[in-house]
Length: 438
Ligand code: ASP
Ligand code: MG
Image (cartoon, rainbow, N blue to C red; front, side, top):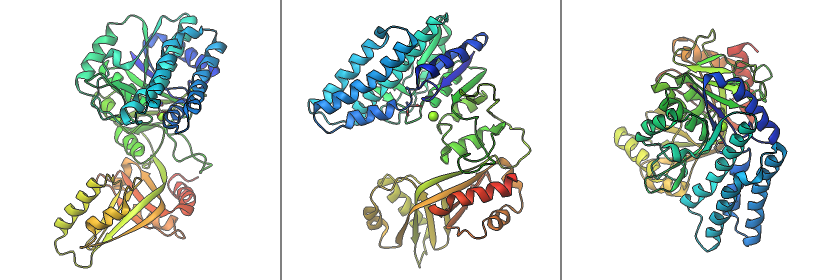
């Protein structure tokens, strides 16, 4: 068995859904389990509708527009409107609940977001049936996707793996399963975090010990850099699990950061493929990547903030570190990259919550300074660890760009630097030239 996950763009219109069905049909012999995202843009629209402050009519219109997108696709595919009737009504009443005065809390929002995947899975399954595939749509929670109650970013419970495995193995039809959603122990619908359908695919892959987990998206796999920034960027044939998860965590958008772990634990290859270009080999994520270049990819994240904390008299550095990280924790700041010296600690983050409060918490012993709207450029590759002059290469290729901070991961798999946001694209281009020669 294999898992084939199709993202929002891949199921974004009637034409795309037909294309997806063709791709699945071609792979029928491998016994695919299909996982789908909501149609492209729908999750954003659902969130917006849920948060719509205006009168009931604005909210109603927003919901009808969302349902209309699905009905239009259904019409074009000729599969019968009734296929999503229950979900459409479910969405209408879920939105109604808010109007009665409840605040849109994370639980209600998850419930509302879930309708995107619930509708798309039904449409894709119906389209498959029309094309002669014996398919059945499933809401992930009906086949065992049990999570904790961390609404908006739920974690899958260990029990889920065994349950999902048993359910899918006992199913004769081809399963078309909703990505992104699950259910907690109390029965409330949860979501796994934005872009979480990749994670669903990986959990299911691990649960059924799939031969391969395929993530079908709209690019030719993981690229050496963002092709919109670097003309010479090309797709990478193979990357290792740790390189891929490092890239995902650093902001490369092709994969949800949690995707790799379940696959890695069972050593299942993850293949990233392009629905628009299905013949392309894409990128294979495996335990040991065979590749000539030491660097896998250069990735960039813009609009991050750097928090600099310095103290002239850091006599008890250990105590201060604890205090600083406790303060981050209390303020809900998650730290990405850290660099320290004796009297200084700099960290990058993309979610500063309350700067004034942070300043107050650490303020007395150290001064806190923030550089807003910076960019983090990261060079990722297993081979970096034994590249003696890596820093020399970086500094000489960026000679005219001021570097605001530099940090190497302990494993040597990533070198990250902070630059001004206006220099970011140029930095990526120059580094790409230095490491990939184009
Ligand atoms: N539909 C969800 C989102 O837009 C999950 C996904 O597409 O992976 O975030
Ligand atoms: Mg995605």
